[in-house]
Length: 399
Image 1 (cartoon, helix red, strand yellow):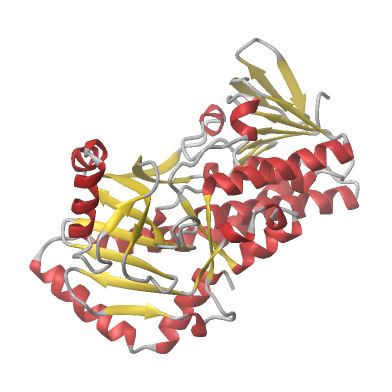
Image 2 (cartoon, helix red, strand yellow):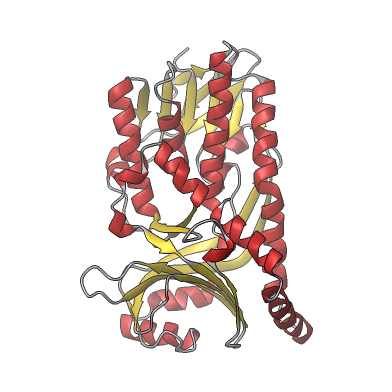
């Protein structure tokens, strides 16, 4: 065997899995299309990741939390859901959860950097991780006894288990013949960081406006000016997003402030702008013969509940636990029974929220007058039902 485990994809999930499996007397091979420099110094990509308390615990267990600067970790105190032009919002307060905050917000590129550094530390200490960069997988085949990954160069690599961690549009998953439920919402998201006049009080906004969806993810104050700062997410049809992307900064600032009904005062761009298509993906299977998926390859969430990377960490933890048990009992780390247990655990943790999120988005983006009235009533009634709000708080905090 060339390795015990081959991981395809060195994004956050793939790096975390390699780190999690290191030190267990396994040969781990990590394959990534990007070059090493891109992994060592990931650039800002606009995305802020909402980490649950559970995810923070998992990152601390992996030794990654301390690799991130505390000044870059913003507390997520509360969450607000707003409908249309109404001033009223349903507020999910941190007091409904089990901590002084619902979770934390960290820039995606900083999580990627910490995951890379953690993997490198493990590789240097344990000498059990081999990294192949600039390598593209062209084929994956498995049998009852082994898995074979073929690279575009023609090199064939054998292992006991192959794990796909190569995005929600995973080509590795497709090579294994696994179909996926894919919902294209027909819209794009523009994400960027902005500073503004009025405080956000470390509350996240999810604003289902009429003809648009807006989100505000609180960040710590701007390091140079001390101004209030947040990640802004605007969801619109792709042509409208492209128009915003092409605006000069002053015009963009005015346009975004207007979209937020000037509730934050004057707004000013303080980062690059990024454009992403809005597509949710859930594979029909999470595993196959000597094959498993983790991270976005296992579930590509709509960002409205901010659970994407949290589910990725859960998948890493669940698969690691199954592999650790197999090693302890001298079992097969690629056995069908092991993979079925992993799949069952991960589906129970993710599938209900995946479909519930789809339902929420469908309800809150309909533009008929009846739908708008129903949403207003639903928000006001829900705001008075404490057990309902407490369940949302526990979901957001991962408790």
